[in-house]
Length: 206
Length: 305
Ligand code: HEM
Image 1 (tube, rainbow over the protein chains, first blue to last red):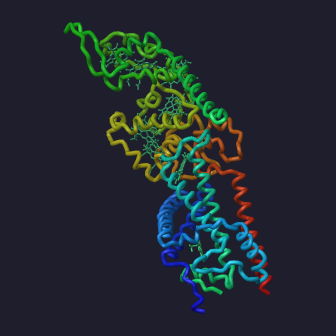
Image 2: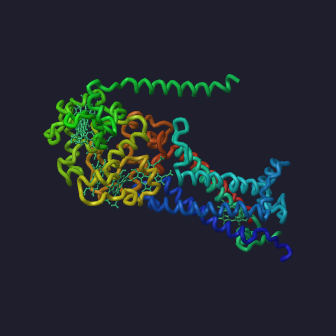
Image 3: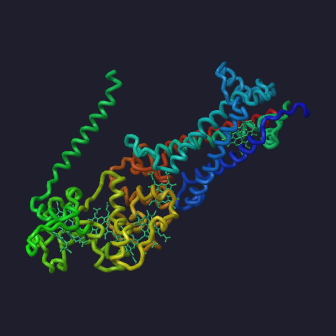
């Protein structure tokens, strides 16, 4: 068995991932609580929600920059380069696997290796989350922290309003990503196997 | 080519026509002729007069609090008035007669019927502390007072200056009391994004009663009763509805189904501006995700057998 183990998640990645996961969950809770705050039964006190959200947001921004740079330095970014060649085909294949083949017990269409640790669906969702959604949230988040930077009016709309809208929209999709991410990870030989990987760093290939 | 230029030309046209309209409005107001007598001296930092004793013309500094800015005078409600409508015509002579200094001046309620407001003012912390000595003109400079209605940013700035020109000016403040004026930046540091809040809401939003509406903006409450709870504004039934945005509320047609949409053109108040459709769509997406997962789980359990 031991020679079947792949070392896929180095220490820096695991530390970043841990901080990130915790942070996103906190941001989600405080963010939703702010959005749906009300007088009678606030989920959290509005002012505490704001302070926690701001603090965690800043920590997460730093941690994102760490991820962004280290990902390049350690060349983990190679896993994030989407090759367009037959992309749709590969996505369909993997999708078909999750919906039909996996349930029937058929084998996986793509095999994990140290060269290609993500399957096509994983890859596209990780790129979407890490290089589109999270940057949008960070940029709009900084702007909301220093509203002086925001253009007052875009036509007749308030600039802050558009910024906030973009911020909550991207935040919402990150939460959707998180839910799917959490579930897809349980797909495998054993539901908890992948969770072990992101803590120990080793992936047990079948 | 023309199609690409036309939006640009359109905006240019808008800009120019706006500029012309603004120009025209400015030109409409003309200072009443008789006021030039007074503004010769009160319109400038310096004034000069012929001193008959010394037989020469003297030039002196005008007390800065006695300078009347003619630009803001012409924007004010009383732009059509002569100075002598409210001030004794004896002021035309210089030096002014000593007795004028202590004669009562015309005040707002001498010409207008502001009884409701006057009774509210009497209940405010200021009048409680200083009596009638705290008069309307301290907040409503008769030489420039106006009601800003259209532009929300300007409205807030203008109204907060009514309070700040005294609360941020130690000299003016200490005409009334010997203690230092509290530093507003630090007394309000519990409010995050303070600079933003102070340009988006008026002081009176928090310093008058939550339930009272328009007329009661004059009933400034003791600081212990000021609004401290963020949810007074950051919630669906935001107090901003009855106060700051009362004019907008009248024309609110609930566009796009935003709660409190009348605020939206000027600000986005977290918690107060939720959109019904956005909420619905998020719920649907969220529901579909969960539904897909649950189906998959069920199939997994069945197939494992
Ligand atoms: C409690 C929350 C989370 C848990 C338990 C979790 C678990 C995991 C696991 C087990 C893996 C490795 C399996 C795989 O590659 O598919 C993984 C990888 C990954 N997760 Fe998460 N995750 C969580 C939250 C998040 C969040 C909030 C994000 C981003 C917004 C995220 C982004 C990623 C990325 C980018 C990878 C791939 C890392 C790489 O190898 O380069 N995760 N996660």
